[in-house]
Length: 306
Ligand code: VAH
Image 1 (cartoon, helix red, strand yellow):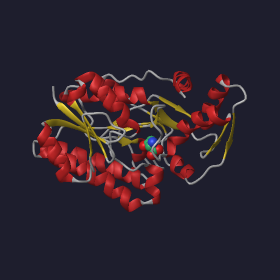
Image 2 (tube, protein in one colour):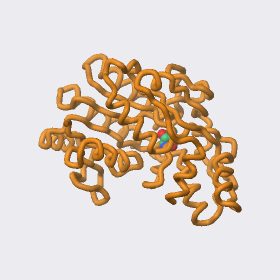
Image 3 (cartoon, helix red, strand yellow):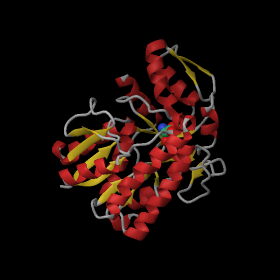
């Protein structure tokens, strides 16, 4: 059983991915690493994913053969410090790709995002292969990273796999500075205050996914036979799409009296540049992807736990 390292293990995806990997491979085979280790469970380590020698030393000492590299600065935060976002998102990817190129790793996972699309991308039924002109540093870093993953795969035979995650909705960890964070914040506000002020307008439709679907898609992609994978950059993957108004209506059905109002901020322009609904035909064909959470199931689960 390959030993695995999750970089960014304390984040929104990492927290749940570590648990799922440990359930699949055994706790002792899955190392969790993040800048701070106090919220992690053993085997774990405080590790700066931009420190190539530290990452390499852990991999060589522990005989790790797979890395899930989740470290990134998301769209909204990235616009406040673009140079830091670019450096963090790209440096951490190259460290892992170069180790795989040298034969230190058998397989790598790296998350892309629907943020890699842009304002001229077809917004409804966004295909796997289409125009991509991202307008955020986060999106530029994700599109660039996808192309570098393809380059390392084609030139050096690196087995790197990737998903273009939509907005991810989870109750186990707080959101991490993204434009889709409203779809998590709204549940906490509903429970706490009975009302929510959305930073996106009522009709802002975005592709979303329950975290359990996202984790299942990740493990399914990583387990797929290499020869079945036709996409060399990053797979479109979809589950559900909704607007803040639709989400609020679903919450109000379960919490009579819940009220929402709207105060769009700088994140509205980011959301307006992204697709509204994704076509994930290749993921369904190549590795059997099917989502389990629709809007009602997502809202029921979030409200059962928050
Ligand atoms: C963000 N949650 O909002 C992330 C995600 C599709 C959005 O990449 O930046």
